[in-house]
Image 1 (cartoon, protein in one colour):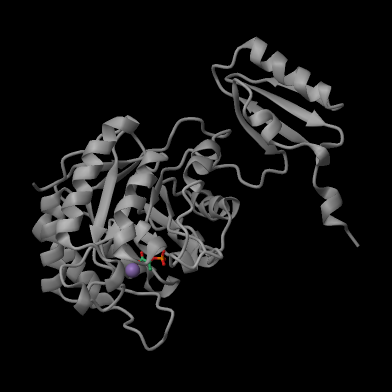
Image 2 (cartoon, rainbow, N blue to C red):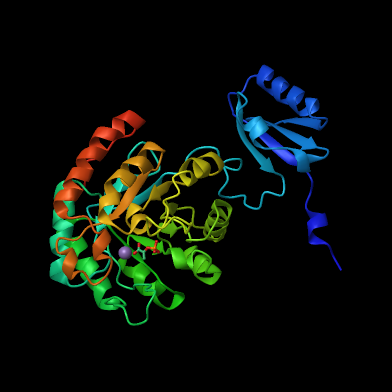
Length: 359
Ligand code: PEP
Ligand code: MN
């Protein structure tokens, strides 16, 4: 029988930043040797990598990560490739086309704010909320037509009728829309109507769906599974890129922890972790993380402060009547307040908030 563990190469790689100086490389080599290990500097065209061999089971990555000039410490058995910064150092900027022929850029200097109801409930409700979030400065409209619900007895979404409503509201407002494809059966319909196809947390490891969205020709918003590691999230993104679709926006939406004060725990540390390893943009969804409206404002600010490329939040003007997730929906006035805070925070983190389309 093959011992798969034995196949894993016992090598680590320290990837130096592009502007690392020779003395930085030298200092890393000395530190490796001081731990009784062997260093193998490999000078590349753009940057130096230093392989470590020896009894690396004993080596803490943190020993090297804080040294000057170090970009990342990775295991050579590193499972992903296309999504990694090693492979593509510059940030990916995903452009979402607007109906007026412009583009919303996600992953560059601009921050994106995506807002709207959890579910599309009617044309009237969607348009009302869309106009309100647009007036406040949102760049895109969210709204589920196909809803992945925990209970089979809960509202499952309006389906294709919901997609048609979203398309109408896009025409009426000029806001691009993001909506979820819950399985491969509905993907073609969702692709026809959506500007960004969402893969929800529950489907992050639905590999058949991931491969299909990799060929759908639209940008994809890939949400982190509630029990998925950052590595697993990146591997799921790798499936999409591997099929030829480079336009993936990652989304941290909270993970399951022992904490019981919050529906999920927004893993803010995932944002800088992803930024370090991957060139893909990452936004945060504090609504599904918190499960409660009062926490959405502070978590949104925190997400942008740690480097998220934007936020996606749920907004409803009559949350007590909402067919899903009313408790976590911001009221329109609260959304105004959030946009104001985003405008104040953006320059502090070297970002800007573009003026939304159609306003
Ligand atoms: C959503 O954004 O509508 C949603 C269902 O979120 P998640 O997949 O993160 O639970
Ligand atoms: Mn929701």
